[in-house]
Amino acid sequence: MLTFKRGHDIGFFAQQLFPGGRDVSKETKNAGEAYDLTKKLLEENVQTIYEATFIYKGVLVMVDILNFENEIYTAYEVKSSIKISETYLRDSCLQYYVLKNSLANFNDLFLTTMNGDYVLEGNVDPKKLFKRRSVKKEAEKNLEYFDKKIEDAGLVLEMNAIPNISIGKHCFKPYQCDFFNTCWKDVVSAESVFNLPFINKDKLFEWHDSGVKTISGIDDTQIENQTHLKIKDSFISNLPVVHLDKIASILSSVKPPFAAIDMEIWAPALPQLQGTRPFQQIPFLFCMSDGNTNDCFLAEHVADTRKEFARELVERTKAYNTLLVYDKTMEELAIKGLKDVAPELAEDLEAVKNKFVDLFEIFRNLYYYHPAFKNNFSLKMISEVFNTGVTYTGIQSGLEAMNYFERLRNTEDPSEKSKTREELISYCLSDAQATLKLAEYLQNLIKTQ
Image (cartoon, rainbow, N blue to C red):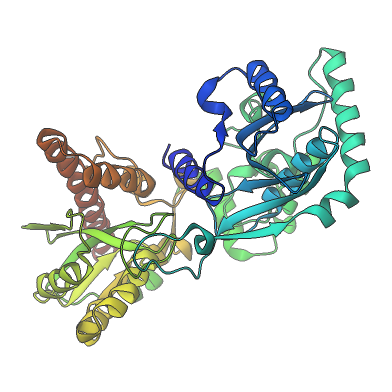
């Protein structure tokens, strides 16, 4: 939901590159009507059309921006991303193909992405916020390819039957296929080889295609890594793999008094704070739990509160020698950003970072592995397997938390603000409590062995 909203927000803002156009999507949601309206606008020589709709050989494309200038058409496909992925490039080349075959005076299509070096100073400048790359060279080389692919697709549709295609890595490229659950319904089982973690997909498909579809069917000689061999045995016995010495080594860094901490970050595609870049990670909430007390700080004001956040983080963590985290990547990036905005607190913030003990290392390195994890090493999955008693009743992910924070910043309704604030704190605190319970479980495991 957040990704969808972000894409639409950026697409709307990109229209300011060519303001004053007609937006086809606002006049109709029907594809056929959108196609007819686009034809009408083209006949009227409307200079700029947003969401211009074209159909060629059954392929429908909607172009974010189509601009008519000096008797030629130029298209712009807008992506709420900094990097140009192979998927974006391929999709844009297909749009180019349809446009080239639909407009006699079509010139080029530019893949338009966010400029990662842009820093907000004053009002947003659309011309500096976006970067453009022509796809003409790549697209022209692939015109015959699209002709063939579209012809093949047409033949499949004419068959009026599901094609008999074996599963493979193509099921995940460029995204997981919409028919995944149909094709994989007899594959995704507790015994499937695809549940084995950290094994290259090429190897997994090699086993599957050779007839080895279950974990118990893998011959030990086919597994080169001894850790993976232990994982296989774990699945068969339904018992965890435990390296107590490794776990104890990591936990030996925990010095009391300690607390678990979790942070939530906000990374708006469109910079909203002065001095920030697109997708810059901005921490807005942290929660701590030491088993007796819980402490949370939510920087909910619309103004830039990063310095206040930094001061509160430094002050509230002083009482602890160790801060337990689960995957410290985000917390360390947040602290790095806080140093930039509050250099006077750089040493104190570095001291906070040095207190981190990351429990994720235990699971990432397979020092503890339970077959119930399968390929999922999220805090929620591991907490569920360990039966920590921590439950998540509202927000379910960091991405969803960002969406809630946007809502908190934008609403004026006191009741909605209060409810959103409570849900954000509840989610973040649940992560901190789950991390603490996880540490207690592991410490007890060592003591009882």
